[in-house]
Image 1 (cartoon, rainbow, N blue to C red):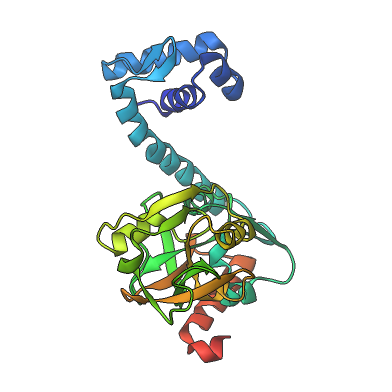
Image 2: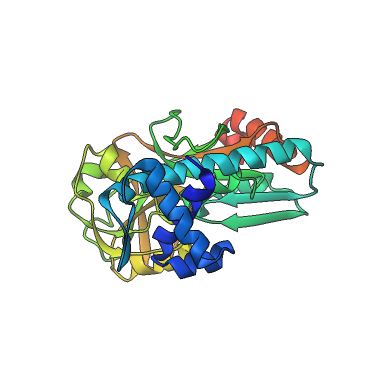
Length: 296
């Protein structure tokens, strides 16, 4: 399967337009049509309806494969370019908002660092494709267990921090005075679905063996202040690292006591880091080996 044709197909499907895809890719509209026709001939099935432009059922299935395939190709190109090129000065870091805890913040170089706060999937993509030297990603896990991350490229992951998790509630919530909460008791509560800011609802459902965890509000973004303001206003609960959830006006952070879960942060990179990236990796790994009281 020709990756150039596949990339054209993904672009047309995403934009729902042959002409818009041609403009984005720098091709003529005729060339885009030829790419799609050649791919359909190669696979022996129609991939797009033309009016409107939309994937067929076969095309939808191809899209499921296309994203990981193209990302893997981009990751291979970036890895080869990194090995063949001269080391770049400074450090670029892609991170989720809740992965920037006290330990990870303390390991950042004081100069020459560019930090990009993005969603969890975007962190993996940035590291795999060389857009970022290092990535910080986080999630729910049993103590000392690694995160379950998609296989997008040959990435090395190091566990660098673990801390308790807390349920963030508005101060007037009936459960706000509890000393601890069980996840099972909250399955039918109203939550804020903020997969790139809070710990994702999908992870809560997995941890509780499929509880409902119905979203009362969907929030697309990575700004923690917006998320906590929505919680304080009563739009839904959120699960956050205890250090992030503590001391926010209008809210109460109640530790999660059951099941036994932690907020885990992992450091991601490809190959062998050099320069400022290598220094940050060394600092974080050294800090993770010290007892929690000594690492602060």
